[in-house]
Length: 61
Image 1 (cartoon, rainbow, N blue to C red):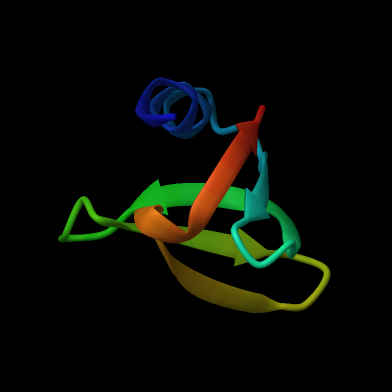
Image 2: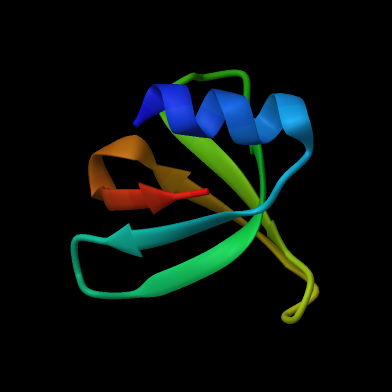
């Protein structure tokens, strides 16, 4: 999972995430100060979400 996230961040590509609760999110990822959290900027919602890596079930680039 970390590999896919890092590749997306370095290539400035969006990610699609499937969370443990069944939610699906897509957006531009970046790391925060704490590497246990992923910052996801979602253009359609004009929002930025902080997502715990423990809550991510699957990552698609």
